[in-house]
Amino acid sequence: MQYTGKKVCVIGSGISGIGAAALLSKRGADVLLYDGNEKADRAQIEGRLAEFPKVQIVIGEFPKEVISTLDLTVISPGVPVELPLIVEMRAAGVKIWGEVELAYQCGKGKVVAITGTNGKTTTTALTFEIMKNYFESAFVVGNIGTPYTSVVDDMTENSVTVAEISSFQLETIEAFQPMASAILNITPDHLDRHKTMENYIAVKESIVKNQTAEQTCVLNYEDEELRRFAKTIEPKVIFFSSMRTLPEGVYLDQDSIVYHDGKNAVVVCKTDELNLLGRHNHENVMAAIALAISMEVPLSVIRETVMNFVAVEHRIEFVQEKNGVAYYNDSKGTNPDAAIKGIQAMNRPTILIGGGYDKNSEYEEWIQAFDGKVRYLVLIGQTREKIADAAKRCGFHDIIFAETLEEAVKISAQKAGAGDAVLLSPACASWGMFKNYEERGRMFKDYVRNL
Image 1 (cartoon, rainbow, N blue to C red):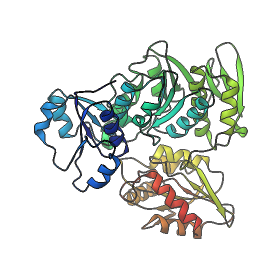
Image 2: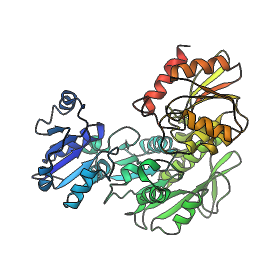
Image 3: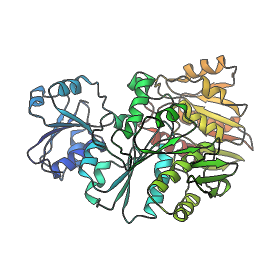
Image 4: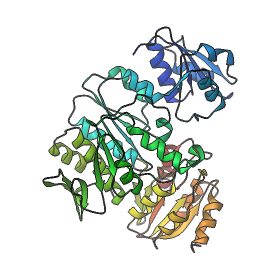
């Protein structure tokens, strides 16, 4: 799609904003890149857009007189849709898209889109590996770290793009229509942004809003909300389940992952053949299998790929063993439900490092999932007292406060004995102490290696 002669504002100077500005400039648009942070590094932004000198960069106060000239505004995922500037633009008739919608409108080929509260990154990475091993052209984009806009010019009509889509990105879709979608689960998260659970659920479920009966949506049968949702949507539903056999779909039968097409059942693989720990990861594998089947990938390709796939960085990632203590990095456990999966995957007594930025989460269910495995809970960050109070209400009192992650690692190493595990699984966002969960995870690994 061309934007010659169009006046477009891009809000946000992160990688998705830069990607959107670059794509639009290449497509002939008159682009204004805006960042409301007065401390934003103009020289750095200009350097990243050096190939696109026509992009106008505005930092700090937005020139309101520009609004009436705009045809489109593209916002980065971190920009709230209720921001007063966005509200004013929308009231003036300016179309508001996110980077995902822009890339979809400009891209080619078929899209496989994955959302859910937890498991998105692992499922997306595995689904991409399957697609890459079968289709001649495959891309992985979205919340997994690669801006969707950055690969648009490399796509062909035969490309398959696997996209990890967050709730923030779904807020601004318009025509986005995946050939196959998946909602892995829905549990409370990002309520500081979405305000109510009903809003959060509605945004997640909007991934199917443009899908047709010829397309597919993969859903978790064990999520009560998604079972209800399945009855209301147009695309064909493929369920997966880790708790029961299904008359049709993908399910866990003791130690086997099975696909049943409604007539015949076939074992895709055994769980002990996988390189992924925990029932939640088996669910991720089943979702990827269902998506691949919906894209008509042969079972032989699916089987070989899932058996060779290794864990995603920062998701129950084994770091190393020191003095008989195994260290695991689960920095991507940024909410209580994800952190529950982390502790459930542990098969040793565990010293658990948690805490971080408060997303208005409740922590009792996480504490209750310790199930006797956690020897000590070492807490850092803004939420440490809130989590400690929740733990004490649940009868757990072996709590230690640390000022930094480095101190938390040292305390954990002192408390752990041979045969124990130390798990970083914060149940909170990283903001405030770290740039993102990736930086938190990398620093944890560095601290462990330097013990």
